Image (cartoon, rainbow, N blue to C red; front, top):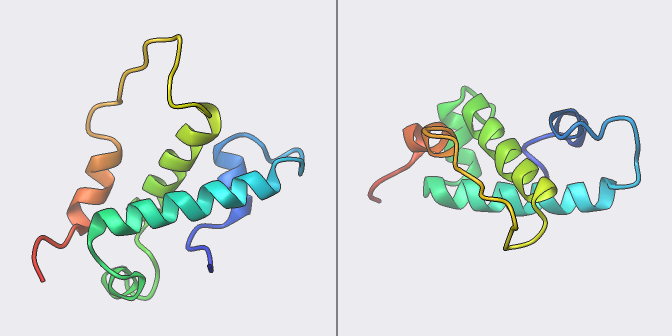
Amino acid sequence: MAHVATLVLFKKHVRADDFDGDDDYLYHLLDAAEETVLRATNRTEDELKEIGGGEIPHGIIQAIFMLGAHWYNQRESVSTVQMHEVPASLQALIKPYRKLAD
C-alpha cells in the first residue's frame, strides 16, 4: 500500500524521529490509520486527491497522524488511566470530506 502520509513526518508527529527501531510498527500503524480514515470518508483516495487539488487534503493527513499516534501511545484496548477524547478533533478533520451518499 502506498502511504498518503510520509513516515518521516509521522515519526516527527509521534516524536520518534531520533531512532529507527519502531519503523516497521509505525508503517503498520500508518497502514491501519490510513485505511480507517479513508474508509470513514466514504471516498476513494483518488476522490480525495481531486478535492485536494491533486494531493490528499491536509486535514485527512492530520487525522491519519492523530489516529496512528493514538494507537502508538495507547497500544492496548484497555487502560488504567481515564482518557478523554479531545472535542471536535478527529471527527472535525474527517467530517468535511465525508461523502454522505453515492
